[in-house]
Length: 301
Image (cartoon, rainbow, N blue to C red; front, side, top):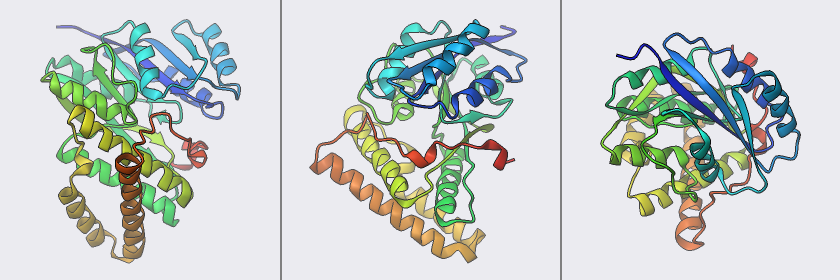
């Protein structure tokens, strides 16, 4: 039996100068025992805000950090394929550059691969948004529902790890983690949700960005169903309704926030349906929700 597992980490950035240093520092400081990080590959796609220069400085200090610069945006899935082409390890971790993992997240996400039946793992995305505000409540509610759904049937997102059992994913997928899920299941391997492998993120802080993000995700899932014949658990309306009822029982005082969030989600899903079915859109090169980019983990702790 192997004593250690080795992994490669792919970080995907588009104008992430505000967060990339915090992310790389968090990855360099990971608490590792049975896991070894062979390399960290930052794929920066058409960044113009100094992201490349910051990463280049890290490359000079740390030999395991590498930078791949893409001159134009082709979408995150295409950047993942670029990472797959250059990564050395058989266990791969992918993470967006606007997130920050907890100190033990890599160990917890990669260790399950000692079991050869496991094909993909995902941690628990944890937003730093203030739940006292309406949008902050909405963001926290959706990620809490994501957590509850993943406990029932793994739904993996924001930061995932997987075996190298394929060479590429569809480059025009707007829901890259779900596309990887579909391939892993097709290969007969299992998904595993790791609820204590925390990765911090930041959701939208205004209604416009909230709708923009949720609309794009819905369109991506409709595309996934059509092209890969795969649906994630969050598309199961029965489970969503059951979890919403549980939320009402837990927090009856916030029922109006819940109803407001449900309205925004239904409206966003309708717009996503309209984009895909009527306008024939597939937003794999999506507009950035600017309010999601000011990630401050200290406020969460």
